[in-house]
Length: 458
Image (cartoon, rainbow, N blue to C red; front, side, top):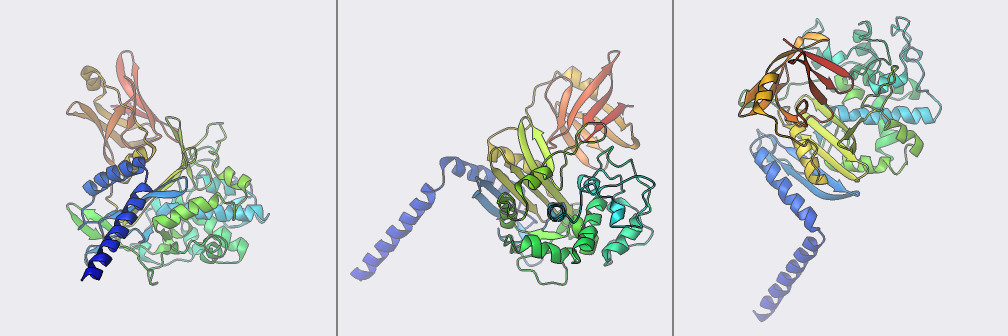
């Protein structure tokens, strides 16, 4: 009995020591961050509903990694931090890096024309370069935004060329290099070009040249028939009810959005890029330079990454949206802070949470708000129509002393004012907006985000 008590005392001492060591290893700042993130995320996700997987790393070391919500509503399985989610458009980074590898090998040039690799792609005497495809400046219509005559086309499996043939004959939306407009078509075409040059399938090329060399063992191609360990289910919301996500063949997403991963391998991907094992330093740095349009203005897109500078805080990032899932991956190079957020419902407040999480991680506020006189707010109320597309409207209303914008097809967003006329949409970073008065009356507001957009007051 004495021996048992002594043994128990030793065990208690050992556990206490381990707890002290673990706690001591976590800084006070990180402990406060953990508490704040726990409060934030637990308030947004119930155990019985779809949820998220969140990771925050500082100087390459994980300071926060937790999961909330359910991975499978029908089986009541909780999400665990090692589970894998659809990435959607974060896939574009991998496609861009594959193209840059081929550039380094001299097998392709960024100024090569698309028609060099897809000879039957109509040019209409307009040169579309590989760089145009990488930077969303090609003018090629987004194949995911086309209303095809055949029903349920997204459920069919396609080989790449078969799908290219379905969207290639639509006219260009603008002259290549003159505007930025996000288009999945560019990255779909890049995947096909990788196959043409390498002689391998897109999947085989990425596995041999990116995933295996970097030991990214938890990044997979989202093939529905394969058994993939720890794959979570995706959901959408219909009214107050959750529904299983609609089925899409991932041959549709292909090089524009086919990959799945957990947060750990997204962190490893970010870290390994900067080890320069698969790309030279000077090549990778080119991917993080905003593309310059023919008129000299710059976009917020490089090669596979969105590049932002909000209140002097620079970020390299990309989000994703695909049936049943949302994702976000943000790196702040000057602070060396990395954030990955994966969600298994199309209804998740991705943008709001991404801003809140990164604000807490950096200890900085992205959107400073000033108080505006109530009478001035009243002048801004009304309906505004986009000059370039009169079918799109924003209705500005006032509730509880605050202006809200009802954006057609996108829901309602609060306005955050930085001055009497300048404002931002809450949790939408990088969009600089300003109300314009002419002859004493509010006539419009302008939005600057990857171009200038004028919204006229009706």
